[in-house]
Length: 433
Image 1 (cartoon, rainbow, N blue to C red):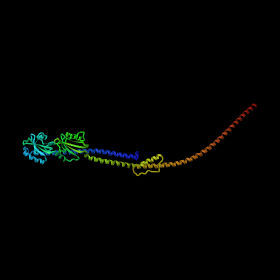
Image 2: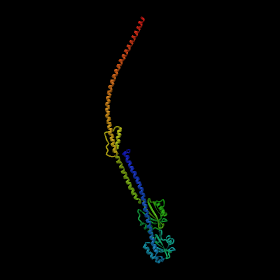
Image 3: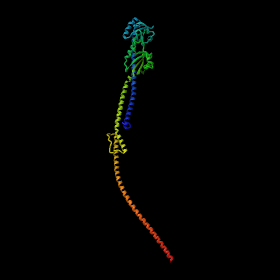
Image 4: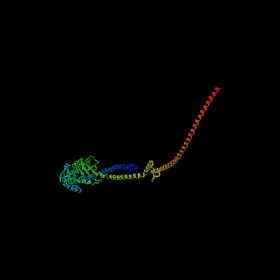
């Protein structure tokens, strides 16, 4: 197809129009879908975060209530270790704790696991002595050679004063058990950190004696591939709740977080952003396919339309032939259609027919004029011959007249001479008389 033809221009412009419409529609749809899908993911993650926070709070509260219920028993509040020990060993087994500890107001504690221990310098113990039940951060316990968490409740005397602290020691994996029970909509994980950035959940502490802390780990330095994960954990500590987008090891992630355990712990839910927005990518792929199909259909429509204007090409060709004087006016353009192009072609055929009639009449008139011209030429020649003959006769008459004029002149001269002679004679007669 030539590039300077109407057909090519029609096909090109239709294709460009289809592409433009598809691109605009696709871009707007992607923008709208991205916004809607992102908002939906954010809303879903916020709900999952809030639900997970409530679940963990309820789980912690359930453990605290278990310890509080035991602490309210009279045989435990008597502060008689011989009575307390067998009872607390049975309760530890029932609940799943490693051990129970009963501490006095001086900071020394009996343990169902064995030796007495000093707990007076531990934060959870001071909080419980202050009359508030609490759960501790994860700590490494040398007695058990593993990470543990301590749930503490104050022991009250009959008068209502704090006389000691009852503490249940649980394996640190209990926090992981709580978080792992929460189902996520997309690939990811849940973790908990304290105000220092130490992991309270989301880390495997089996055979480990130190807490995992990404904020202070050189592996998570700002310029590293995990640096952004460190930064969002700092934001978790600084803010009560929120949602962040970050890259970790080259992959995009969503992080939704909320503070729990009276603001001392911070729950974070990380989910794969690519998977969360997978439906958007699927819709995008489908829209690209639809766009390609639309472009192809638009091109085919343009080609079909270009074929429908083939009669116009013939009209153009015939007009050029007429202009050059080489047209065959007996030929007509055939078209099978009932729209404006057909009307144009029929009009051109009518014009050609009339032009053919005019030229035919002109040709016949020319032949008549040629015959009349020949006859006129012949008559003109005959007239010229007659005129020439007349001119000859006129010349002859003129010559005769000139001769007559000469004779008259001569006669007049003779008469004049005779008259002169007569006058002379008269004079002579008179003289003689």
